[in-house]
Image (cartoon, rainbow, N blue to C red; front, side, top):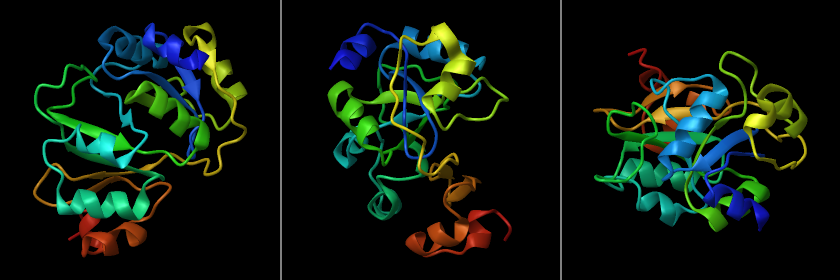
Length: 202
């Protein structure tokens, strides 16, 4: 797979996911991750999420595989839920100012899964310039990112077309940081809580 060699050489790629197109780099290549942040016009204060190709891969990246994490993964992966958790200690990566956490997701797209299983964990963020609309086609991504990316993988229009929802499990109770592709009403029953608590409303 030509894309595998490109990523292993430290290049950036754009690939389809179920939500929107993403710009990706080898998560363990710190120079490539920094280049992805620059391509987006983003600083380290907005760190890169990590996409994985399997549940087992996620288990190796977290400090503790908790019951809540397991329940969310079983309910929503592969799919449109990103989960913030304390990362495994001593991982040799620099995703930005993560404060010891990592945001993980397993996308529900065959092209993305094939790439992730070939390459390993990738730092992937939406393939748009910061402040612009996340792209749902490879052409949209190319318009924004141009030659900063080595390879554009065209998987057709993104099925969901909305960014993933983000839930934070790193604190004393689960907290929904972004309610997007999945609603609090969909997520709350999996954690035996209420949408209001997830939203921080009570």
